[in-house]
Length: 222
Image (cartoon, rainbow, N blue to C red; front, side, top):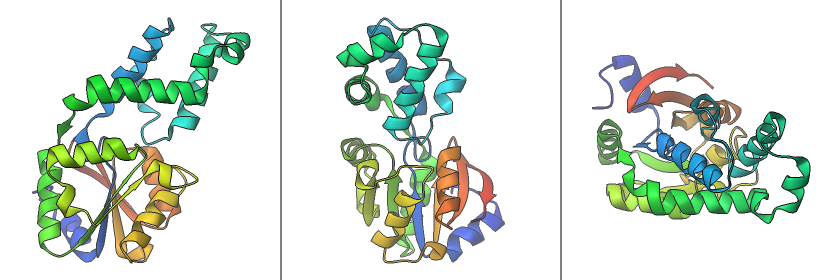
């Protein structure tokens, strides 16, 4: 089971709807996303980003992430504003598209499902709870992970980053997930690994469990 902590089990049991983040929560994929980003930067002739910087982007949509990356590279002297303005490969849209292609073609097949989270998902679905996936990743990636992990039948809805106007840490994605389950936010519980996602759950007034490496870390009340 996900955890033996009776307090956590009681909180899960009390929730009518469970909303799961994907990357870093049900699959071990954050490291592969980092590799894909640095792979792309290397192909562009740019220096890699340190792990702590890449980890700070967990849960963020592409637009603010790549905007910050460009500013960091400019501040370090690796890029000039003229290069950013003139090179079509350095638009946020192009960076997002290139990184997505590298990740999906090379690194996504290497992602590993957290067995404890998969067991939790199956058990809760068998108990009649309503489950939603709420990820900043695009639908193609969500579909691939759910298909290869054989978890797709357990989710009543799948909400992806391109379905909301404002990504995490805004509450939009979790509010839409609760709505898709025909539940009020206070009747749901979010499972999240990243601080941006935990902040989004709080903004949506939904209690959250911080999960890391397939294990419970802390309870974050709304």
